[in-house]
Image (cartoon, rainbow, N blue to C red; front, side, top):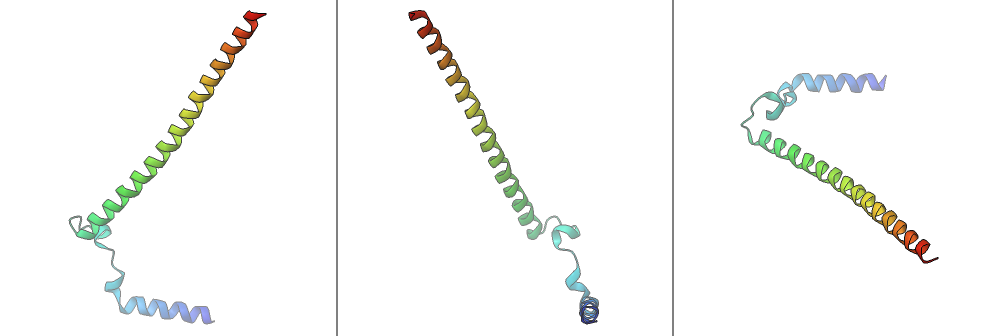
Length: 86
């Protein structure tokens, strides 16, 4: 019963102050508002961070693959040289 009262109170408060429930400038359609520009820059910043992290991880794995290939090539060269001395 207390939950119902709390929900009813929250609904009454939301109904009595409808202007506070409107969407922000970015969602409401005023794209020239400073709030919209700030949100766009925030999205671009987060996108940049995600892309840089994924690029760093891919570069690290590319480095490991090249390093392993170089070590395999070096190992094969050592095996060929040691076989020739016998």
